[in-house]
Length: 337
Image (cartoon, rainbow, N blue to C red; front, side):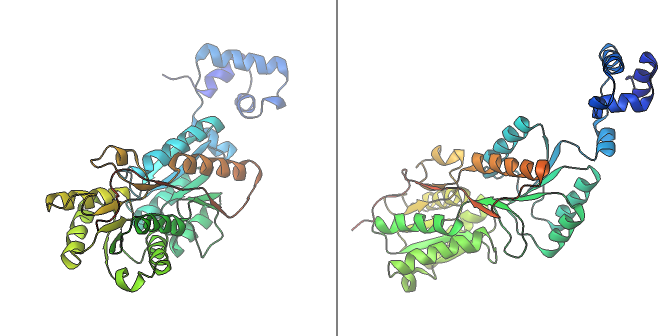
C-alpha cells in the first residue's frame, strides 16, 4: 500500500496537521520538527495527493484549456507554447476538446470548477452568454486565445484577423489578379470568419474590385473535405477565377487538391493563399503561400498573462495583438496575361 500522511505523522511522532503545514506552509513549523517530517517523507517515499492538497490550499497548479478542434494542426503550435510556458511557471495543463459543442463546453467548465483549476485558457471560439455565465461561476482568471469577446471584458491574445486577411488578398492583387474568390468559415462566425471576410472586402474595395469579386465566395466549417467541396462549388459558379484566398491552410490544401483533381494547375492557372502557416503548409506540393500566425508565441504568451493574473491579479491591456507575417511560397504567382 502507498504510504499516507497518517504514516508520516506516526513515524516522526507529530500530528497530521503538522505534516500538512510542512508541505503547504513550511515556514510555520520550527526547523527541528520540519526536518523530522521531511526525513520521514523521504524515507517512506510519500507522495501527497494533489487533489487533496488542492482542496486545502484552493490551488491546484493546473490550468484548464478548452480547444475547439484538437485535430486542427493550428493548435499543435499553440499548445506547445502553452506547455513550455506552463512548465517554466510550475503548472500542468488540463486540455479538453470541445468540438464547438455548447453542452461539452459547459460540462468542461463545470469540471474545471470541481478540479480547482487555477486559471482558464479559452481558445478560438465565441463567448456566448452561457459560456460567460459559467466563467463567472468559476470566478477564476480567464484568457481568450486566438479569439476575443466584443461583449465581455475578457483579456485576449490574437493577431489582427482583418489586417492579416487584407494583407493576403493585397498580395494576390499585387500579383495582378482581378478575379479573386474567397473560401471562408461558415458565417455568422463573429471572430475569425467575419473579420477575415472583412479584410477580403477591404482589399477589394481599395483596388476597385469589390463589385466584381465580393460575391465570389463559398463557405465551409473547419474541415479539409468540406473545403474541397466548397472549392468545387466556387469554380462551378465562377470558372474565371484566377486566385483564391482561403481562411485557413487546411482550406487552402482542400482547394489545391480539388483543383488538381479537376486538372487546374496551381499556381500556373489559379493562385491559392492560406492562413496560419501550419507545419504542413511547407510540406505540400506546391508549398503554400500563407499568413503566418505566431502560434507558439500566442500559446506561450497566453499562459504568461494568465499566470500574472493568478499571482498578483495583474490585468494589462485587454486586447493584445501579436504580429502576423505574409509568407510567399509556391502556390501564388503573377496572373497570366
